[in-house]
Amino acid sequence: MSGQARSFQGKIYEQMSISEENMTGKPEQIQRQVLEKYAENFPSIYLDVVRHADLSTITWAPLMFRHPWGIIFGNLSKGNITVAGDAMHPMTPDLGQGDGSSLEDAVVLGRHIGNSVIRNGGLIVQGDMAKAIDDYVKERRWRAACLDHRVVYIRVEAARRSKMVDEVLEGWSIL
Image (cartoon, rainbow, N blue to C red; front, side, top):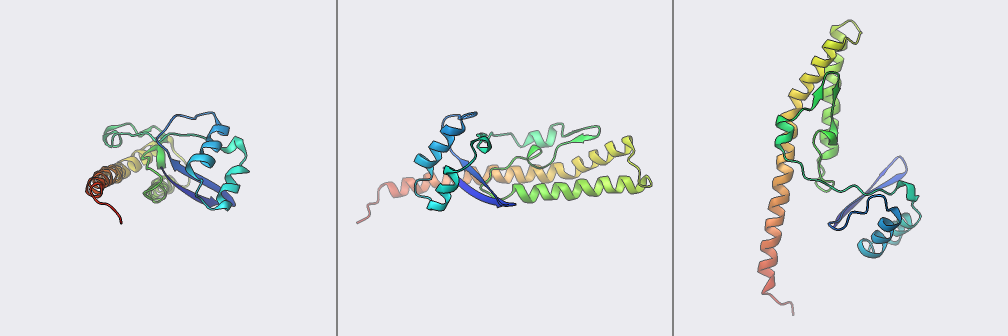
């Protein structure tokens, strides 16, 4: 299990990675599991936040693996519609890449849309907007694929090293 809590505009957002059963649609069970099983050694202030959380705000969303080549070869836009942020390149919450790459997406998308509006005298022209979005996807596709590949590599390498450490430590005894 890994986890982190973030505060944004006075609200606390908790992210935990737990490899167990699917608890979708069961906020009481999620709350109970977090309190009894995963956060029992956390500071009491954290436990109070979990205990008093509005159950309608507790959700379960399993992290899912998506192959990096889906970013390279997949459809990321259609006409005036595109994906950005986690929809384009989902990242696990514990490696710190998601927020930064999402901000990069916003800057690049904003630049392409802004240039389209400027080119058209302050007007939004459908065909040119589709081109602006397509140019955004072309610019971001490889950066997002490289980030996604790095995240997969780091996870695989960390798991491999963890297994090696476990094997080495298995024969040792602490006196």
